[in-house]
Picture 1 (cartoon, rainbow, N blue to C red):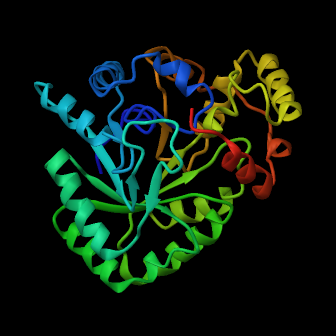
Picture 2 (picture 1 turned 120 degrees about the horizontal axis):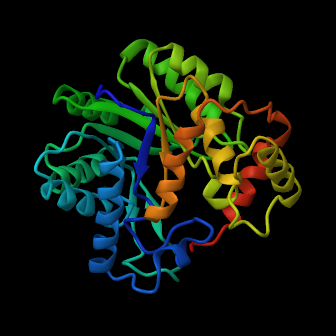
Length: 317
């Protein structure tokens, strides 16, 4: 795998489409959310990320035009020395609108994999190093589909790494299944999962995956904005407790949220979904405080039911 100078990777979910499930996302992007404006805006964040040592870039077919934005930015570089991951399995439906009934559609069929793989290659060409199945859950039969597995094995033979991302209250069950399957076929080398102070349910199984030589990518480390100062409505008691702890060790709320995940030794890459250069700068500033000792925060872990029901209630923008 590509050698990383630090663990930070840039996720493009919030930069590739005008609507996203992040508290404060609408204000972060400003009033002009045209494709041309967002492409320029995305390129500015990518410039800042790359100039500050970030080398992992995470996108997906469902992230609006994020693949195209990333590809057009890469083409402007005199030399690109990065590692790019994308995902298949969801289709973007919002047509650059925010107030729509349905933003995306899930499809884990082999036919859709073939279609989206062609689209990804058309966008990114050879600048894609890792291909994930997007948001695998136990109710998806994708890991049991021999036609999907065969297609992914073919993609791997072309030189790519293969992984999955997980989501929902049964992430642990999905990861357990992945590890069992991987014992036989050794197909998957990456695993991207939601892990943050409020969602600690997968810690033990992620350690096990790491011990089985699977690279762990942490996503949603700020819990879609719940673990930031933009959150004025949800889990306020826990948030106040966390703010008090952060203050005692000279960290901001955002810094303790990010560093807590960064310090987990089994995490290979920790994604930032920063929508602005200033947000990304704050994430990078955490590197100056890597040696901060953070106390045990197990008591701030929400139940999976509480965590995921809250996430489901969040609005797009």
